[in-house]
Image (cartoon, rainbow over the protein chains, first blue to last red):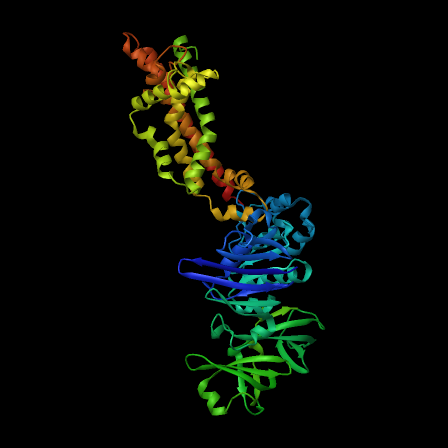
Amino acid sequence: MTLEVDIGHALGGFRLNVAFEAPPGVTVLFGRSGSGKTSVVNAVAGLLRPDRGRVSVDGEVLFDTGSGRWLPPHRRRLGYIFQEGRLFPHMTVRQNLSYGRWFAGDGASESMEHVIDMLGIGHLLSRRPGGLSGGEKQRVAIGRALLAGPRLLLADEPLAALDEGRKGEILPYFERLRDEVSVPILYVSHSAAEVARLATTVVVLQDGQVVRQGPAGEVLSDPEVMPTGVRGAGALLVARVARHHEDGLTELEAGGAALFLPQVAQEVGREVRVRVAAHDVILAREKPEGLSALNLLPGVVSAIRAGEGPGMLVSLETPAGTVLARVTRRSAQALGIEPGAACHAVIKTVAIAPEDVGGL
Amino acid sequence: MSWLGPEEWQAVALSLKVSFWATLVGLPIGIFTAYALARWRFPGKQVVNGLVHLPLILPPVVTGYLLLLTFGTTGPVGGLLEKVGIVFAFRWTGAALAAGVMAFPLMVRAIRLSIEAVDPKLEEAAATLGASRIWVFVTVTLPLILPGVLAGAILAFAKAMGEFGATITFVSNIPGQTQTLPSAVYAFLQVPGGEGPAMRLVIVSVVIAMGALLLSEVVARRAATRVAGG
């Protein structure tokens, strides 16, 4: 199942010009607000008719200005999870869940029980959306989209309207969706943490243009890609859970290097992805001694990006993968950090929050 | 209602019948018009909006006279309809048409407000779940505007019960045929000793109007709790 998008659209003074391919898995449209992410998803869903272009799912053309083809939204068989849930207030949760199913007829393959069970919404079925919490509403919205038997799931910042605690509650459901349901997902986000946990593929949008697209680990480790600013920069490491220690730490193994993290939920042997924010990484030219930080990765500087202001973003090739570090220009000069220089990356264990760790 | 004389009872029954049909036939047209005005963009929208509201602003006598010109047996529309057996002039159907036209703006306003209060994003969501436009309307829009539709219907019914000027101009004041409750009150007040029957009809009128208002309140409140409730 592949989604192919190539569209152009003018909205007031804003010009959208986007072409990308979304392979199976989770493709995240990543960019700050106003970069055109929602317009792209709406064009795929048929809620926005672009000025020009073509959208196809697995070879079936949904929209093509060349041939004049335009499939209305109700015939596209896509599930859309909106930022604000958009549950029908006059229906019960059960009626909301069955809504798309009824139109899909035989096209709906997911079993109602499985979805209700996976999302943990069995106790809500007879309630109305007005009485649900934000997190519960969003879980029902996920279920409703999924039960309509979609070929592709669209999610437009489904966590943005939730507070931090609720985000952490919903994110695992998207991971389960990615791992347990075969439907590919096009997911819009401006949060680097969400991208790091969910994305198989990342498409970076900036001012209505695609500036980068590719596998998540590759795109996120590139210092040139910081659509949400240097504060959001952070690399993705893939590691295996080696041991859970008694003092509350989990030992991970990545490319022969050991990483210590606060206890993670995954079992020993499981692969996990860990987001290491660039501002949590310290660089040292020599192997530091007598340091409280537990994680020390040797590596070689592969690229440096000088931004505006006093900071720089350094990418370091380590046995565990590419690590991004944000350091001041002053320290970089003092230490002689330049491409090819050998360095040690120091990562504080407690800097990696549980929401930075996700299943793979 | 034995305290009502036969002539008075006839007027009340006729008014109920006229208002019932005026409301029932007007409702689908009203919903359609309100939807078009609330959601569609089309050339001449302001003209349509003006035409809908015209009966509210014009003197009722003028509306009645225009109806007579259009739907009278010699009128362009009335002549055509007469050939297929539909006659409005000096019939109760004419009274219903006059009442319906006069009540139409009130009905459309109430329904239009409730349609504008429905978030189009919910309708979009329904479309992405596979509902065609008609189904979106039936399963999402209509249930959500139901309180507004009922309020509009009740308002239109009450207005139809009280319609006088256009009715008497269009279909006159024939007892048993076109003499509605207000026409009867007027007729009774024209003759000596008519105050008694007139007063009884006034009481009936007040009771029906109050009942309609209370009913619309109850309906609106019940619909609101249904949507908001957990």
